[in-house]
Length: 312
Image (cartoon, rainbow, N blue to C red; front, side):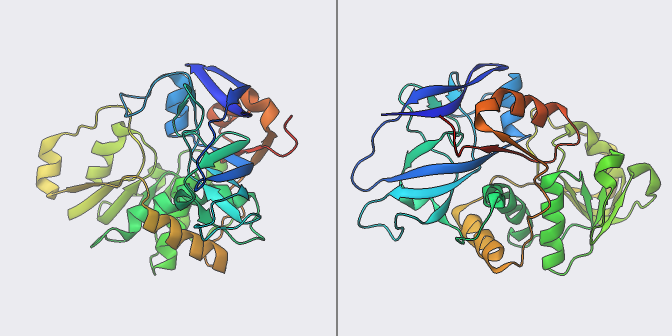
């Protein structure tokens, strides 16, 4: 058995190619992928070669953890059925080619317990479930404060803002790119230089830029908290005296849990969480190399989606 998949042979050595598809056992699910998303966080680091040592890291690999498709086959003991639309957070079914995270493929074999059922009417936005669940995980941690300031107005920053509003918050968002400040939003989006506040009780950083930490500490209220919601390839450090004076607190938000995926899917299926305006680019999977470069180098690209239907 074979399938088409995006394969990174090494930094910037990416192509769509035929790969072995390891058959599952009688309990596994086979899913035909319709669309998959490209992450400008972890996938960009894999593509550029800047990913720090990470469990399972190594080339060649099939990247991706954002895919949506339709169940083709599934074991009798699963609560899923053929024809169900599902979110796929990845797979490791490609033989000697690593699945890190393994969702950027035309067909996937995986344990059905890893899949999350989506509404049948869900569009390509269903592929954004993992990113939305990451935002939910950062906000829903036990005892977490709602963000008063969110740094970065990419997809993750927008999703954090939407979760904050769902929970009764009213965040301000910083964004240095004028094109990403444009549009109508349910919150204020500012250039950082236009904001003079230095009393934010809780700041969420969604940029992955460790060099911002000293600036953010300077914007905290005494006893305030900074939440690192992105992925940081560079060492995170800060000047101690300003943090000492502010009695600053630092929290790291990791990736989603199964609970986050299920809770976020429920909000999506009910229409309470909107994802309709986050996908800016869609490219056929056959042009994957071009799509990845656009996703990582074109600032107008909020979210790139690969369309797998019709790939031969």
